Length: 257
Ligand SMILES: Nc1ncnc2c1ncn2[C@@H]1O[C@H](COP(=O)(O)OP(=O)(O)OP(=O)(O)O)[C@@H](O)[C@H]1O
Ligand SMILES: [Mg+2]
Image 1 (tube, rainbow, N blue to C red):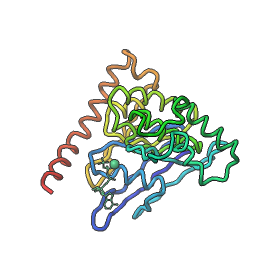
Image 2: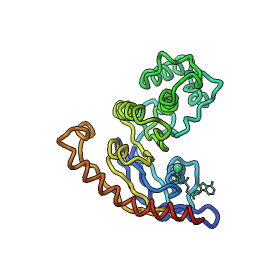
Image 3: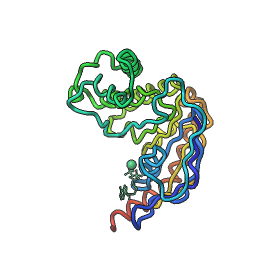
Image 4: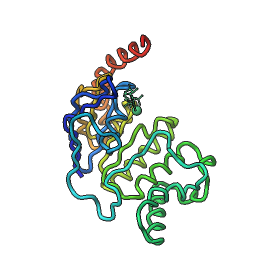
């Protein structure tokens, strides 16, 4: 499905968090949101997901959800948000319980999500028995169990070490491809944004304004190859120079607050 973010502004009381943000995400694309801490990335994701009503502006979804979709969009959070007393299977099932499904459909959806996320052997484990990477796989399995058209990811890999993050990026990209899902992916990590994003939306420090949209016009499969190294480095430099000033200023504002 296509997503249009049209002139979104948001205030919390007297504080302006977001100012006039517009961009488009085409069906099957992944768009990354980057910007300094507190610039309103999670707020924007919440507005896109319908959890927060914006002060002004509009979010539109166009097109048809995939066959069997129970929810057009779902979230993957940084802190996994798992129920500690439920098994892996029970946590994935959680997303389906509000829908009236037969036992067979419930089971086949959970099995499919567990399989896609490499969790089949862990289905009866409790979250505390799992590594951080495995826990996040449960969060992802829960999100895809409903066959969403649009996945909203709020720093899904930030709590993980670098190697686990790299592994999970590849698996997430496979999932996006198999599900033909569209994504809005918030991250602090420029390399992550450059690995997964078709476009990277750079926000300024608070109040978050659109600073630039950077397109990554290299096939995902080719981005890690030596032949792409120069162009990838150029894009990295461009992104870094865009956010460096914002990050430094944001840091000072926090320090003086
Ligand atoms: N419910 C709320 N009520 C009041 N202010 C809020 C609320 N949620 C967020 N804020 C403030 O709005 C601003 C934007 O917050 P938000 O969490 O969207 O930023 P962010 O870019 O996701 O930050 P981070 O990079 O730290 O995750 C921050 O100054 C934050 O303190
Ligand atoms: Mg955030």
